[in-house]
Image 1 (tube, rainbow, N blue to C red):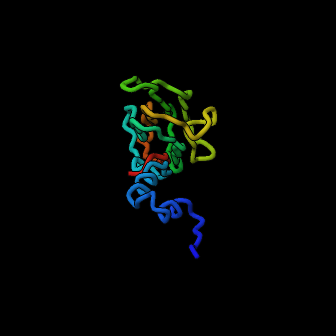
Image 2 (cartoon, helix red, strand yellow; image 1 turned 180 degrees about the vertical axis):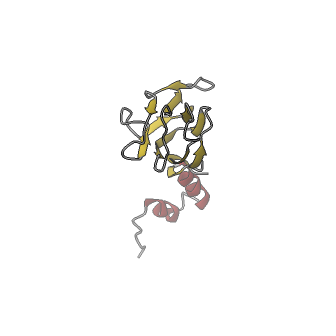
Image 3 (cartoon, rainbow, N blue to C red; image 1 turned 90 degrees about the vertical axis):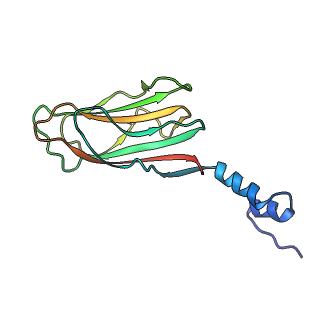
Length: 156
C-alpha cells in the first residue's frame, strides 16, 4: 500500500511528474520575508541618506522600517526628517508616497515605524522603494540611529 504524505509537493514528486530541481525552482519563486541586509546603524551628517532601497525587476513586498531614536541628545533647532519614495515604472523617478515625517524632539515611543500608518503595509512594488533620513541642523552633535527593515522577495 502506498503511503500518503500531506505535503502536495512531495506527493507530486512521488507521482513522477516533478523533479527535485523543478520543486526547488518553484520554492525559490515564493516570496521569502527577511530582515533586510541594509538594516544597521546610520550616522547622520546633514545630507539626505538612504537607509533602505530596493529596486528590482520582480515584484516584492516591503514590510516597513523601524528607526530607534532612543538615546538621542536633541538640542534646540535640531530636527530629523524621514521620507518614503517609490517608483512606478522601469527607469522612472522616485516620488514621495508618504508625508515627510519631521521629528523635532525625542518621540514617544522612541522606536517609530515608517512609512507612517497613512500607508497600509506591506507596500507592493516592482521598480523601486526608498527610505531616507536627514538631520537638518547640528547643535548637540550628529545623531546615530539603529534601523531595521523587512521585505519579502523571491528566493535566490
